[in-house]
Length: 456
Image (cartoon, rainbow, N blue to C red):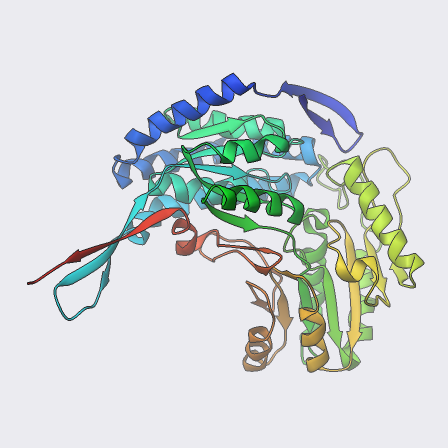
């Protein structure tokens, strides 16, 4: 099976790669296992030096790397450049902080001494998505390499050049073969890989279906897994919110990366008398955005990641509208070559409709007007997802109280959900389990070994 780069701006094939054979994969696993036996003994300072070189190379090659993102999945070029910078910051963060995170943790006991020591466990297999092709990989690679593990990555099939570039950067930074390994594979082969005893942990960022499949494979083989799956994040605007700030944040939160983010602000929930004002200003900000080539800096609306993605969103919106929802803005494909879809706002969405229950992974905002805070909380929690969310209010104490009642892994107050190295990232319910980033991210795939010293 060929793994292809298809430019979503014009749906033309650019380049293809052959899927690895069974024999090639076996050689790569064997090399990773051999390298792990050495890497786990390397001093943290030396591991940090490698990641600092990786970060420097991302910045040195930023323009080239950003263009690959835009070419393969259509992200606006300025946003692609910002992703490269964010990726570099993740490697730097763990290079600078992992030593402190991995220090022995003493346990206070009355008789003798005890402490927890963090030790590496082996090869971690990561299955990563196309929407942030460098940064998503960095979030699992950086902490685990610093912890003394080694990484094998099955990247999304539509970003093979980005996938190859990551491995190339590690090699250029001086990493021994096997510390970071790219695997050109189809998703159907992951379950078989999970059976290999040399692979000890599995991490996936992707869809519910993919997550359930990986979790099944991990569970069957008694292996730890971390899942970061879909989201339908609520974005709550209370009646005492700063409307201008909320509108600005909602536009970025919903339409950044063309809405193709797990933590995108997908459900806009406005309380009482401010709802109509918010909706009008929200619509004004989105109307008339410039559509065009994502490589051009003046473009504000680019393509989705693929033609399949555009067709799926078109069907989800059409099915929702047929059920009685209203289109305030957009609602259809843009009449031009490529995987384009109009920035869209839907209202009058009710339980039973597609947009009420499904994640719409694109530039479609679902807008809800509710009578009070209690109703806003109930609506926010009426979802199978539980990744992130936002609450806007000038009363911070009130906002925190509302946030504490939202069933998600993350809540941001007076800003949309964003990923940063020093904050833990992850969800609950059908949005997955485990955490990436921060100190919590480096604790997922280590042996938390108790060492007890008797005083008897």
